[in-house]
Amino acid sequence: MATFVLNQPLISLLFMATLFSCYPATLASTLNDQDNTTTTHLHFYLHDTLSGSNPSAIRVAGLNPNATSLSFGDVVIFDDPLTKEPDLNSTLVGRAQGYYTHVSKEDLTLMMVVNFLFLEGRLNGSTLSVIGRNSVLNKVREFPIVGGSGVFRGATGWVLDQTYSVDPRTGDGIFEFDVFLV
Image (cartoon, rainbow, N blue to C red; front, side):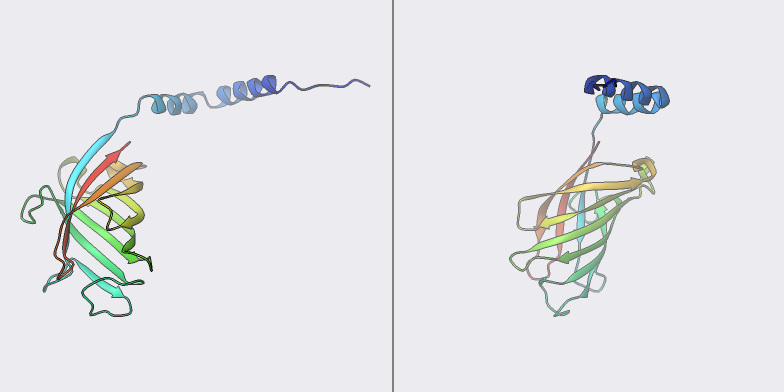
């Protein structure tokens, strides 16, 4: 009775040869994309307004809907303007639409789900989808980009968020965003 000893490197080589012969264009494209990655940087300001007669963010759930600060379990829906500069009257480049939920009993930490909708130039109508943990008191917060549409279809990357200013009386805030797309 003959015994066959399989050589692991030989099996791997045969598997790879079969794989490349079946899907050469797809694998070559994927390998080239990994070697030739480019990063695109976007910069804008988000204006989250909870106060006044025309707020861009409203609390829709929570223990005390009339409170001026967030508490554990609060849910806020927003449709915030995105501008080129910190001034709300500067050029509108898009909208941030989504929600955040206060998820920590220990500190001010939010779960953010947001779509950035762009409204100008070649980005008009394109979106980026972002989800992540927002430790509000950290100087810089980072969120993953989980997808997009239009020119950002299949996007990956990350978002850095910094507080530009906050009104402690109302909770209204301006936040600076740096977006890096790979």
